[in-house]
Length: 210
Image (cartoon, rainbow, N blue to C red; front, side, top):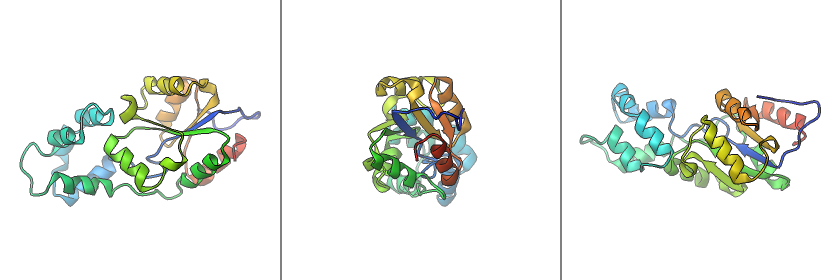
């Protein structure tokens, strides 16, 4: 993973993660814990059922109905699926020191192809794009729910390069998780770890972007 260079590279595309960069994560362990407590659900039981259907849900190979049936509605509950989904959505809010402003500035410059490369279920991804107006800044949305792949698997980065039709070295990727940034760098993408808006602005200035 590289954060700066004496001779800044040139880029044709800039890709952002969403959870942990712009918004809270869609349905990570913190978000799940809050909602499970709200509905009085045994966390250990839910988490024991969660991993396999969650992976499939984020790859869009099963629906939200299938995911919730596997993890929660395998027995009667005193609340509805719609109530639970609404609570899930409410966990999505902008994080402090987020990159939404940076995204808007880069998109407005019209100098680069701007997109997302994120892991998210179709339900939450599309809700988050609409709720916070992120889609208006984007030329492409390379979400796991559209590609059928998830970070940090190398295949999702290779597929992103193929879809964009741009050499990997001319793509910049911004992600809050070092493992995801490192995985992108391993296939030749120039990746930086997001550590807050101020640090991101500094990193982008060093790359000749801001």
